[in-house]
Image (cartoon, rainbow, N blue to C red; front, side, top):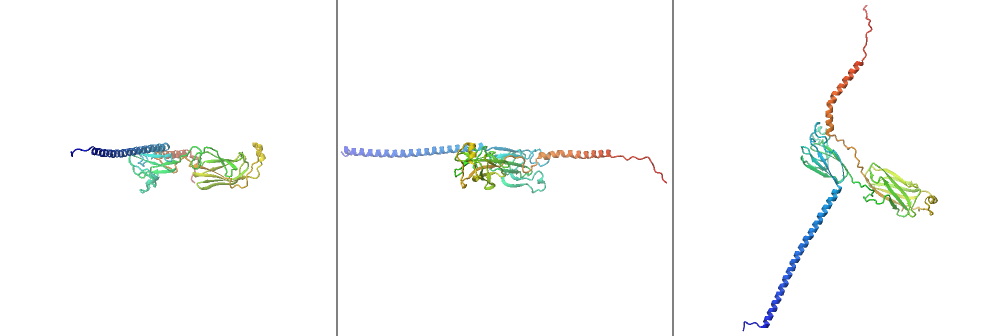
Length: 391
């Protein structure tokens, strides 16, 4: 019959169908694999982004905590009545406190507790009465910082990144003046010019020719401007580790690239030597030793008798390789006593305002009493009792 399919044809049909089925399954598996790969890739990217974001958040938190650990904030109030230049103003000071000392990277926050707007402007104001002479005199800003106008109840802050003395005032009320002293952060341990802590102090340094060891230190360990510092040093034989007597040397002190001290052909004793110096400026310093050599003849037997050494100590005549260098930092002296510019506070003028009437009464009274006292002490001329008779 025509509609009947032979076994061979059925086998061929089944084989072709199976191949198609396998092919379709393969395509489906491939699509599934691609889809799974895309999903996995997207999830992996999301996980990576989450991890990176987490690391960023941790970094920001650590950075902010480390900064807050070393920097501080200070509050300065603008008290009620600072806007009023009259002698009987209720304000005791223009800014409270009027002078403040902070460290580098510290922040000052000014809060307006007055009833009028103010500014915090770097520069010099007019003083207590300077503004009255001219309507155009409203201080001299220097452009370092300026808050602009901020209203009562508002605040403004500024972070000081450099050391120095910073005067400021209010351009609206130029009689209001204040001072911020900014000091450098000073470590409490001896260190070199790069700030590296000196783990061993005094410092031991051997000259390049390996002949002399220099034992060097300074006192006080933190060097400040306008304070006397002692540089203390001794010379040793680097081979036998014995102190050297009568050593001739040159010592040079360089600060901020300029030579500030030099002593040539100096001679040390058996106990070493020292130099005293007062630095007027802050900044890194270098202490150099040059031309280290024997001063005349050193009797080795004298040293042998003292330390029990049997061998002599000798130094070659060539001292070119016999040098030493040490570094340190001189810091600006943080001790502040008075402001460089006398700021007259309202309390001072108010005191004079109330004392003036008393002086007006007391001074004339004292003068009157002096006149009365003098009049009482004045001698009276008495008459002799004789009268003249006309001729």
